[in-house]
Length: 227
Image (cartoon, rainbow, N blue to C red; front, side, top):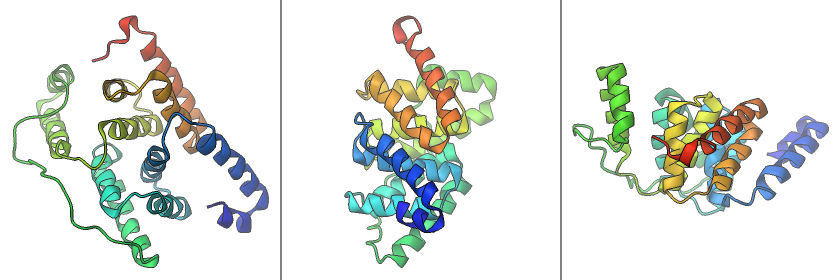
């Protein structure tokens, strides 16, 4: 991406390179795979589907992620990013794969259980949403149920992805609490959770600032027990 930036504005490119060193080299709590996934999440949420998305897709392939992995990520975050945003990213992904002659998907998917009745959402959260509006709760159950069979992304990766969506959309109350809880239950440490928010600063410093405040507030609650 910085190669293109240099042709547009050398000073901007220098700033971008310094930023990349800070987030890609100095944030050591996250793996390269996790950073790439979170960068793609940022692109979808902000619809930066030009040079940034192309650079991150290329980086994904260079670091062992497959077309099936990328499609599962887009299917997963459509829940929170919105289906139109994820669909736009999927269409752009197909174009990039075609332009760069990258290996396409194998068709490996997962059962969606659209007609089921269960939901992996924690019971207290599920009931709280149902108390707000039963029809909305049914929609949330459907979205969660359709993703329950995903296996290409780890629970930790999925939790970090949804935390990033929360920071970028500034949904830092109920959903952020649920997603941080999921990350911790998947074995993430508080410092790794902070690294997720810190990494998101490249997509908007002030959003990450508010995200860090919300995260620290969760950690200082009595017993750090979340819903």
